[in-house]
Length: 210
Image (cartoon, rainbow, N blue to C red; front, side):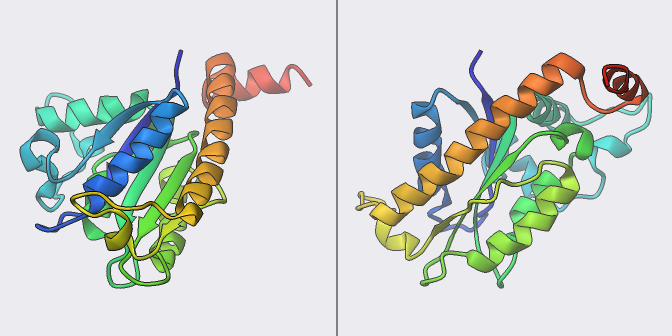
């Protein structure tokens, strides 16, 4: 069974190159056999996730009606074996549209899965500060990021609307990040399938084998 990835976009601007960058990452993942589920706050469920979060999915009590978009996307994230984010650097930190969408769902949807980070900017640093800020954010959700980050500098030159030339450094760092993401995805999926995720029964099962 192929690995499944939930790929989140971070840009919500009217004019954006995020979808083109995400399409590139998606293409590279699909070449490796991943099934990629793109989650874009602008287009997923007709822009439902463009609204500022007031109530996350995990705050609904029994008997309350959970909005259909939350049920659907929650199930899609839970079904994923790994998480990938493709986001611009905004004010030297995490894009608000990305944080808003991902925060609708609790750690139970993300935990014990690896994540990969792709950040981009118009300048020379390729969204490096956003990449640094995303590490603790994703870690707190439970999907620990792999060590290699795909930084894309001068993204507007590489991902033009009518085409563009992807720089060798972008191709190389993308491959390095995906090498790590694929390895950890297989490793953690295998352990989840065999032992489940941590619980009292899990620890009893694991400790009983020592």
